[in-house]
Length: 66
Image 1: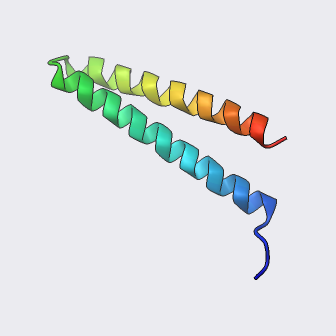
Image 2: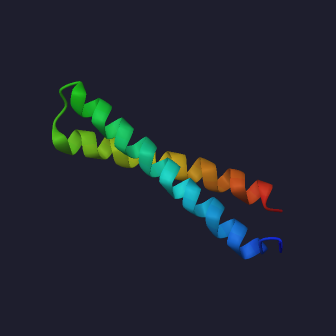
């Protein structure tokens, strides 16, 4: 069996990163909504969580991929 190419591995890691950030954003928005916040406030909290998670994971991958 042939080894996976580095480009394919990076694409898989980036896909996992985006899915993890999406899960964090949806969870944060859902929790904020469960607290009784308005929908715009919940969406803003979810967007912030998505952006923060994506930034941290991308920075980690950038360090790891050297």
